[in-house]
Length: 126
Image (cartoon, rainbow, N blue to C red; front, side, top):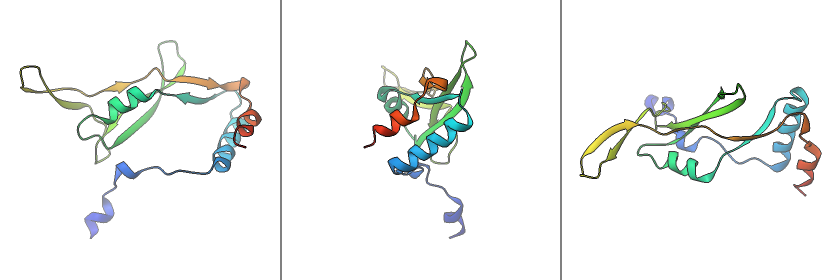
């Protein structure tokens, strides 16, 4: 029983919230950080690529700065223990197994800052 209490199911982390609560979270953040990046967008293909790695239970996002010093996200898979996946096993063309570096990604698109219009976003909810 004690072991079950200490084990976290990383595949189940996160939950759906209401549009109103989401709007409140975004509004509060943009009011406190009016010039910061408000949102990032990431394509389905790279998310599916990361999640498809053997043993991947979720994705971890790190705040980072890119080559131009702009705020971005670096994201990679995590295993069932919540550890960053740094390696993965692949099958080579000749049928042998090999351990290679796991997928790590960036190039998230961003938007927001002083040009973000919260009320326009909120208007899209209704």
